[in-house]
Amino acid sequence: MRAPSTRATAWLLVTLAAASGCIDVICLIRLNGYFASVVTGNLVHFGHALATADARSLMGAVVAVGGYAVGVAAATLPLRRTPPGWNGRTAVVTSAEAVLLLGFTVGWFACSARPGYGFGLVLLGMAAVSSGIQSVVTVGAGVKGASTTYLTGSLTELVRRRIVDPHRFADVGGVGRLAGLVLGAVLGTVLLRTAPTWAPALAAALVIAVIAFAVGLTRRASAASDHRQRR
Image 1 (cartoon, rainbow, N blue to C red):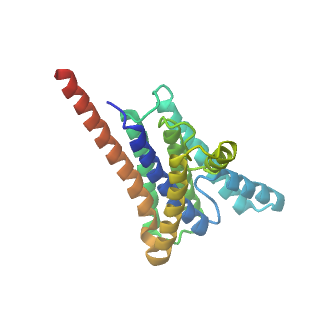
Image 2: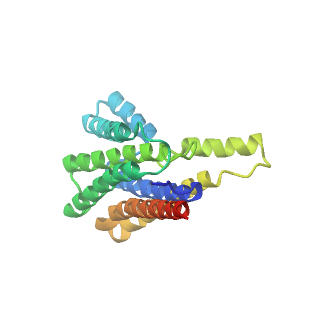
Image 3: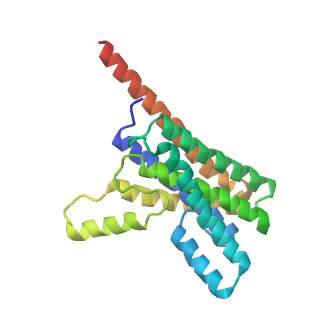
């Protein structure tokens, strides 16, 4: 199965970044200020909770950071011997992220977008695990230095490149992922205000769209390759 082109992969990563922005803003606003993917912010929460002996906040930080780590480990195991690029195994691993986001959506709908403390931790854990999975999928996508969850490095590299070589064309993929993250956060916020029970559905739909589009591209590329070989 042939991988999508670099340009197509770049757009897939922009879409994943939008999904990340959407689920992160939901967790930030409705799940006690924690993120699904921004481990730096969650570690700051962890330190604050330790200093103030806030057990409830401490548990949230543990779930957020621990869930993310679990997602990274769970995705790395099946992909550790897979060459860079999108392939069938990548699609399966990304499907696991989609299932988690769909589960988050169902749980969110069941509690009418108002989870209590305990159930909120469950939802936060699901979102964090899905973000960890997405991070590994992104790293393995074959685009050097790409990220769709933690974008501090992307912004740093964009600015650094412009300073070091101001005549060099900017990293369009990095700009796109940053814009995608912001757009996902904007849309997630709008949904939280207008249709709160359906807000997480956007993140799940975006990831499912990425899987469907990537699988379609790989099948068309493989079919075209087979046709050329037969000729």
